[in-house]
Length: 203
Image 1 (tube, rainbow, N blue to C red):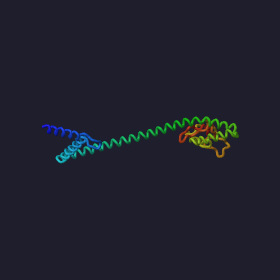
Image 2 (image 1 turned 30 degrees about the horizontal axis):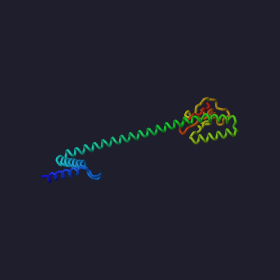
Image 3 (image 1 turned 135 degrees about the vertical axis):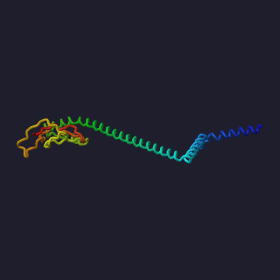
Image 4 (image 1 turned 90 degrees about the vertical axis):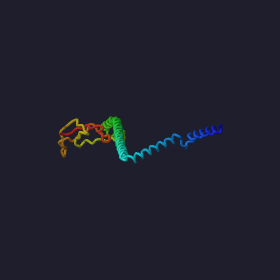
């Protein structure tokens, strides 16, 4: 009688040990149970397909439609993300250009002062050197002077502050709205007008 009890206990202990993983490579009882459930569901699906092929086909069509819907949602979401990225890049570039133009505008009064000094002392070597240094700095950061004297007025680049009669000694006579004198230089920053030129035009 005692021997039988011992055998029963031994069997119970051995069975419990089978359900406990000895290491990470051993399959656990939960994994074994999951495999059994998957197998059972697979068997049920195969039985359903054999017994009712129409229902199985309908289910496949439903799954295909669902997959297409999910794919469409993914494509729309990807397009929205790309558009958002592009808008953010454009906004960032616009803000950077606005800041750069704001900084560039601060250099214009300095150049105006140098130009005025050159008119009073055109042969001064120091002023000439300063003008050349500013021209080089403007070229490096992308500031260019707007052409004015001798060209026809363009409201996009020029601001006419006075209109006078064309000179009689002109040969040939300048066309109407031709710029005769520049009162203040205008400048471009890249493709943007930093400041229009203030000019005098003929009738």
